[in-house]
Image 1 (cartoon, rainbow, N blue to C red):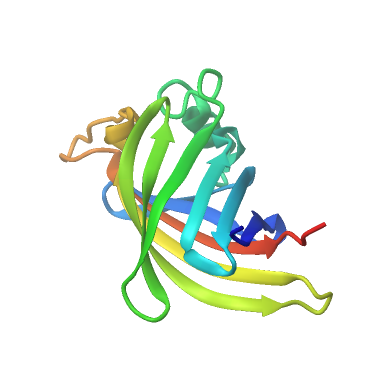
Image 2 (cartoon, one colour):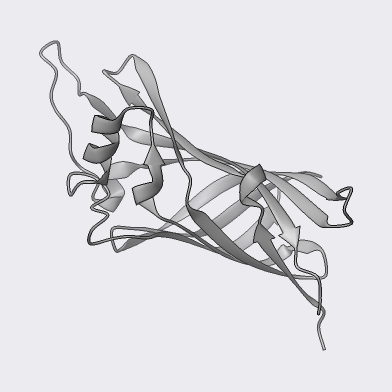
Length: 180
């Protein structure tokens, strides 16, 4: 029988963030604070990983309460009708020793589309309490309109209030679940 290893997110050492252009000249940054992941690997080989990640878009924070409320509304995430955003990984292919491309399906507002994310593997270490941890930095770009996040406002000088390209950035620390 294959040796399956289960990993979970260490929320105290994980950040899921994004940034998007505002007025076409600056970036607005935000984070999500409520997320989970179930990752299963053969031994410690992450190229074999089954990845199921979800987050609650209602946990969005951009440092501005009015903007956060707008992002939770039907104009954007529509958290009343779509309380979860999901990512299901289908492959993790090496680019170099510690760099990979993670492919999977991202589901926002009930719309699933394939995405590719750049992954930097930080390694596996034991913490001072004997827990095994694995670290990853994940980066990618999506067009928010592909998932029905269409709201915008035209600017008098031309262009739009909110950019279409969203940059995703996550620093993930996984905790190996000890076999019972």
